[in-house]
Length: 315
Image (tube, rainbow, N blue to C red; front, side, top):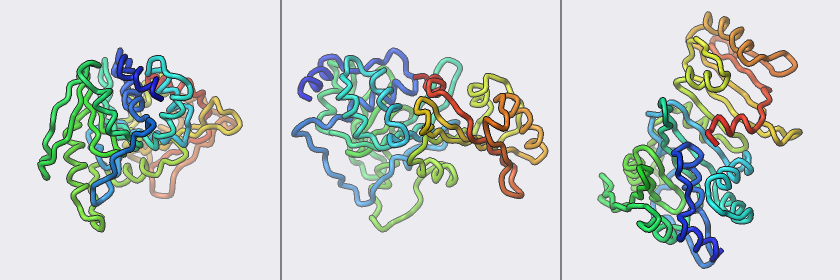
């Protein structure tokens, strides 16, 4: 572990050639190493803050990646983006990640990311890694409500902050996430006021991700184009879904998709188009409509090679 710490300090341990979703997450993951003799600072907040509470409602695509859902995915993120890291250290880092939450906005030539990560963070080691020698700039940020000082680290436009030993904030609007953390942490333990900004259904859906990767697209047209390779003109409110590792074939996921249409008429038309776009047959997937009165179409049992998801996530 001492060798790894020296390696991180000397080389920065970060490959930031592209600010893609997975590369940005890898920057955070590479920090989450508990070295011998290094103890995390205990939480001082009265009310425990959940990482998901810190995301805003301005993203068009959200994803929750629990390590338990597919440890290989988290390990792959680290291995592919942290230079010269050993297999044993990859395993060590991934063991200290609980769940990664991200909100994304895709632009023509870039992906805008806002991420909050549940993890075990060695706060004392952060200044040794995120320093000017490794290209990072640090500035103090004063929380609006408590006037407490927090540190924001910047590397070529990538912002990161560690408001506690269990949460990392990264990407777009880190100052917003710090203020949100500070205001929630100031509440009494018994205060259960809802503080998250995303809709209830989205929060509960992502928060419930335990043994599967869950995602939600509230601007689903671009997501559908990426997923199917076809430009579909569907009147959709949103699309949500999950990836679960196929126990019989660990190299692939089983994908479930929920399409929420604006009307029953569009659901009927969209059902045919989606079946054609995915090239599905009855033996490949189960296609069904939601409860009476809803305009939901459910497609489950789609088998997807894991490499396809890695490509979708720019990994």
